[in-house]
Length: 414
Image (cartoon, rainbow, N blue to C red; front, top):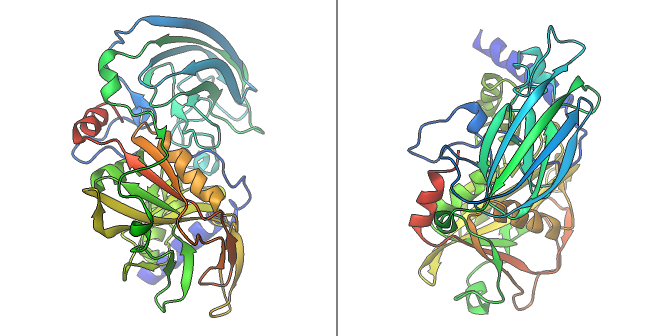
């Protein structure tokens, strides 16, 4: 009986995956961001990035604008550039009607039933037809729910866009009227958000350090694989926080657990993103963390993913995390055993840059440094036989320094 149920689970998930295999590889991420450890889970509407605020803004109002979104709208560029710490107050009225709906809906959207879970939306954590927003570049900015009203605090410099949570081939009739007020950052907010600054040097990041770090990770048999292409300086809690805030999801290690979890969460983004990642080795052990970032619609063939290890030594008194990031773009033959494995984008610098953009957009990264070590790695093959190439530069991200800054921010983040 249990075997039959498990087979049924596999069949359901398989058909779900099979139907979701052809979307842009780097679409913006949607979904819920778990709360910091020790905080209660907030309502769905607040599980978004940027930070939701419960206090009225005290900064000076610097602009107000009104917009009309017709029912066939996708994303609309407001022309409003916001800065870190600025409050954005949004409110909306209006009605939409979808052909298969029983009635009109407002900016809060339609409740998602079981059948509706098969519909892939720009922001899957909210209902079809809800009013949504995003700040920053479209390929990395995470949508957030606006609904009838929302007060958010921007973690970055970026352009505000607003849109309707619907697919291009399933639009509603009607319109929303949206009012936007932007308030200048409050003096206290400067200590809770970091503006990532590009630097030309970081203490302890030099060729002597790189002499202690393997240039590549390896499989369990010692075959060299992916290139080490990024590092993070900061404590473990801060490292986890920045990935979570950027929408990266921890990857499950157990296949059966992943399938069952996929059923429990009913085709959510996380059930796909957490598809198991093979173990690779650095410093003589498997990765400490695996993180994935992708659309559920494309994840079976396309997934941004990385592995990260805690270095066995500190750098200038700080914890060093060493990572290898690649972008799955399809499938190819595994030359070790003639099996099937994921094919990575051979230009791995694109994935390194993708990691940089997603993490610096959180307001939790203080400094960004690109280091070119002696004898840089520029071309090689993975453990499975695929090839890749790079400029040889390694990305170094230094997280916001003090625990005080991080704890202050976590009280404002969802």
